[in-house]
Image (cartoon, rainbow, N blue to C red; front, side, top):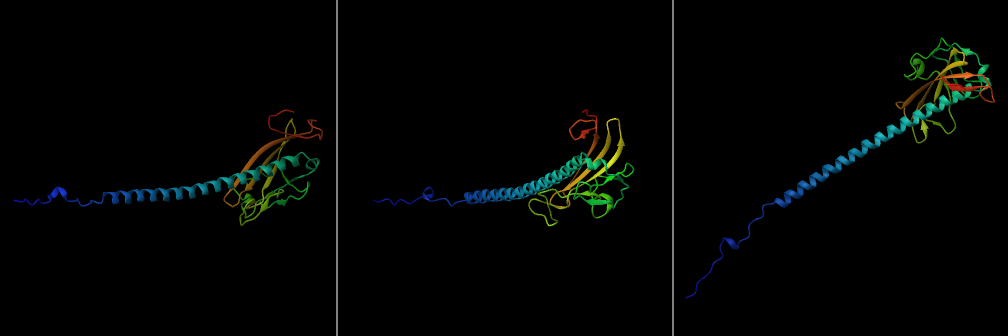
Length: 206
């Protein structure tokens, strides 16, 4: 007598539950979110780098203008330049040694940190375009939005010499990137150098 054996439940394959598919979908979703976050972060970092560069260019332009004013005050032409009763519209494009204006002690800038100086659409004071500076309102590499400038005010005299205050501004590639620097100098003719003039910061000695 033959016995017929049948396959029980243990011999059947269990249907898949789909956990691997769900896990893969979740992993892909997480990776996509990370990629989007990285792209956004890179864009923000590029904008921060651009703003930082613009600020650095603006500061460099302002320091360049201030150093030019400092250098000019050491020239013999500066000693023969009479002070000017400056107004909000007094300005000059510096093109020669004798062209910068020196404002009198009674004509300070009302708020040097606010640009443009004078409250108009353009800055008052001395405007200069140094070599290798390109002025362009459309932006671009190695260009500044406005030409840098400086404002010289004769504060008076002291036992050391003539005391000046220099305010200078500079722009980066846009009108929103600007920097202003300020310095006080004493110019003396006490023979501290061969030209008979020497710039020094307040309180310094020859």
